[in-house]
Length: 380
Ligand code: FAD
Image 1: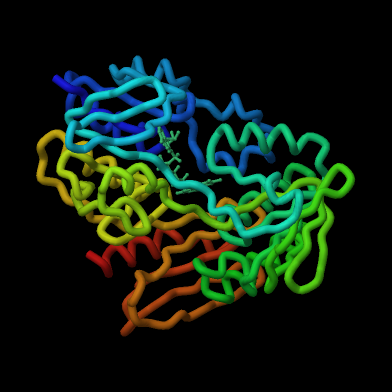
Image 2: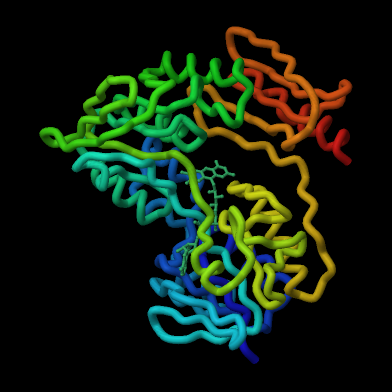
């Protein structure tokens, strides 16, 4: 019997493997991954510095132990190069692998901002344990870090770098941090609080050039300004990993297209996690992939499950001013009402009085459970 093959051992691949093994102890399972297959929690990457965590300390279970626990064969450091959907075979750097069913859990890759200058190629991005190891190594002795991108990951790294004793400048075109996720009052509250903690904001402009200067870099901005920093980190967003699927002829839009049963355009191939566009939505967070894994495990076991997401708050790990948000679904009509106090902002998005989203910052995050409950009742 050909195995179930999961490509990718991030949270999506491993969460699925665990959920699948709860239902099926016997089907052969092969895990193929470009990295070393160690289990770690990716959200820890943006709050590990303040905790003084070295890269190896973020590994909760080594790959070999994961494989043993799951009764699986792990092919680590084995990039998949091509998928032959007709023959149901993968071509890898270590030979061919046949599958009965294939799951793509390939993640996403950091978008590189268009930068000129001889230091542009040395701009860092952190989206894996290997990236964190490189970042951690080059931070030794670095006193000032410039971050390109004032979104969720940029703000989390800004807070973490500050907490680890470094100076931080954050650059981005939006007028406020987390501009795409938060209503203006909530973004302003985060901006003020992180500013008071020490973040230097260079908003309303973009980085154009990064040049080597002494042991660090000079970043030139579109507004004519410059910043000198020891290291430059880019956090401008992620792009689902779709190259393999596209080359194999699977339907791809922003991500690998799957339906509510996590099926791609080929009946023997599924996808989940950051690489997948599920019913038209790419949701690159942990809660969606956990829901997807539950449903996909049941589907692979012959069940008729279909994905229906619960309310999934996005938590921004900025301890200087925590943020929790459930953005209203695209196209939902309504308006924001905002209560802004000295310790935080409570913003509720309502249409005809019915709650359709919220954003809480600082001390107002205490209202999270009550609002999640109200939202769940409103969307039931
Ligand atoms: P990944 O973890 O990227 O795994 C992809 C896997 O595919 C890897 O094993 C890789 O080696 C493998 N792979 C890729 N291409 C190939 C190939 N060709 N051949 C073989 N293997 C391949 N979400 C939250 O909900 N809350 C948070 O607080 C939060 N914080 C975050 C902080 C940071 C710094 C980052 C970067 C993300 C954060 N996220 C957070 C997002 C969340 O971590 C991701 O949505 C999730 O980890 C994605 O898991 P994944 O398994 O889909 O992808």
